[in-house]
Image (cartoon, rainbow, N blue to C red; front, side, top):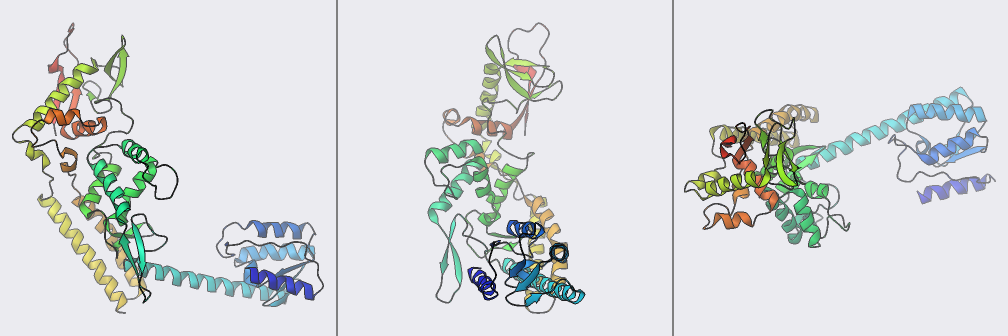
Length: 440
């Protein structure tokens, strides 16, 4: 850009012209369609009669849009302004032939840009389908450059530990808020170098497809990446379910300060229970029409005793069943594997010249939605991380008392549905019979 500017100044000097202004839009292509502030300023100067001659390095530095060129012709012709370029000489836009030449050059320049863009997109697509990374270094990996020019991505152990730690905590029922606070309290460096972690940053880092070794192109997974994953695929899938599927999440909020708020339901209208204060005593109350109300301490104690008893039962190990061997899931996994194999085969056929790019795009467009649907059916919520350390231990109550509130809430929500019914008229003591517990 500096060299082109020098050439323009030299051309003006040879003609004895005084340069009244230099308008340069660095890093903004004339073809991109993005706003060019300096070009807009030039047009204002021409329209205001402040310019006699416009000097450019090449016609395509001015425009590559036919519509933009037409506006330029109108303004220049109205102001009687000459146009001269270093590469193509003078543009006489006052004559029909001059305008025709300008339009032809503009069309050719646009065609070249579009053709180049197509080549770049195809190269990017091929790179993605080969699993090769693109862009800047991703948090968790670094790049090693071999003497032959090849690039290999290798895991950065200290960063991978952070990603796995976040995943483990979230799968065990910790909230995003709690995980974020812990990272900040310990001074763990952030991926971007900013002083503190925020919840969205934690979420984005742990949910990236590349953590599971998946290559994404234009928002879609196109295959396996050519790097070692940090998280196993099934664990990443489980994490995605926890964070993105509200019907299957194991943590019911990041700001809840009570065991059952937002989890327990009203048996009359179905609304959730929220905390209220009745004569300065915290109580759970129906958030809908206030249909039911109970002292918080009594309801928390009942639910806690039931959870501890269930986790202490001889058959508690059955709670760790993941469902990974269910016939429906096995069939969905097999279908997804078959679809991935077909996509890989199509990519090989394209590489071998047996099919062209258009055919590859058609195959990909048809198989990708089928693969996404099969993968969705293959996902099973695994309760094992959430209940880790709570089953097959000598003293479940001691472990339970040592858990964070967010994890206890997640365990309750995973094991049972709590419904609060109305009590008998005139009842003045807590009635456990008016609390329905449905084990999941």
